[in-house]
Length: 358
Image (cartoon, rainbow, N blue to C red; front, side, top):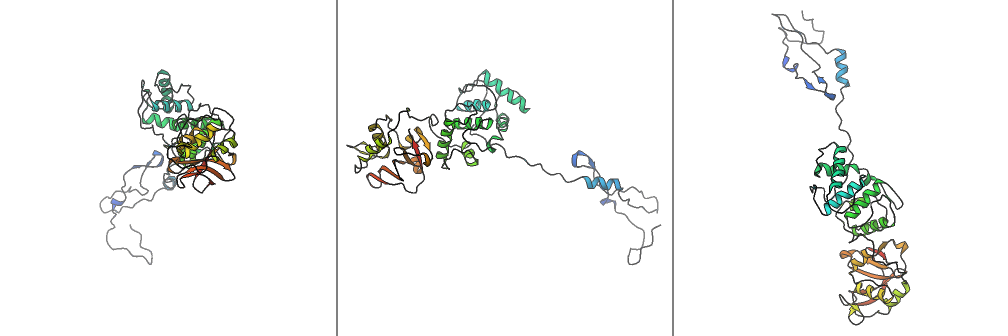
């Protein structure tokens, strides 16, 4: 029998009707793969005119439902940046820059390979080792999964801030990527003077602070398409001691000589790099004739605090389109296109770097 409604409540007269459509829920997969059933189930059947009641869930069932917290997506660490070769498929017998990059990545991962750009048996063995460790098909073919495995093996490296003197896997990754940008470094995991020089060249080419500290901006440049120089900033300096004052004296002797694009002598006139070529050679330093950009990346890019008279000041605008000879005290001697002659003047506010051949 139905219980009499309590005072203050109302119910319709007549036989009670239970709508089971809202009670029969499909069985689904709950959190953790456990089957979850609707909290309310219909267990009574109608027999004749007998009424049916909808049973409430048991306390245990309620507890189970309450304990099933919504699934929360795990936090995922940012993926390591991909190199420009990540879309290239390589296999035994392949040759070229992509293979060199692969060999450097494998070396950074612990392999001992000669970076010769030839996908031979040793490179094949190292690739298979990486594939096996990553749990992917061990076929020796370098496709997207293998590139991702190599990137993942050094995924912590770009999170590290590196400075000269540091050592380890992150430095090896840095050296490998610098080599892909044009450097010629030994991938030994030691952040020495040559690695520092390549870092400064890269920072300068990327237009970021030239401080030799490899932070987030430098890592982004390392994994970007920034090129530094042929040979990677090894420099053309022969080790000869540069007499800065002799360089300045030679340049000063040409003040007032007309500007001439491509010129490199008092008789023809000078452009900016022609004046550098003339002054250095007059001072006994045998520099080949180059463009301003060629002189930037043929020397050593240094911070202003290390600059000395006779060093070069290169302006980064127009793809390193202009340079002068540093006099000291914030001044340079340069063959000025705007003034159409060789002048001595203060360094202006345009972005610039200092370059040394000492």
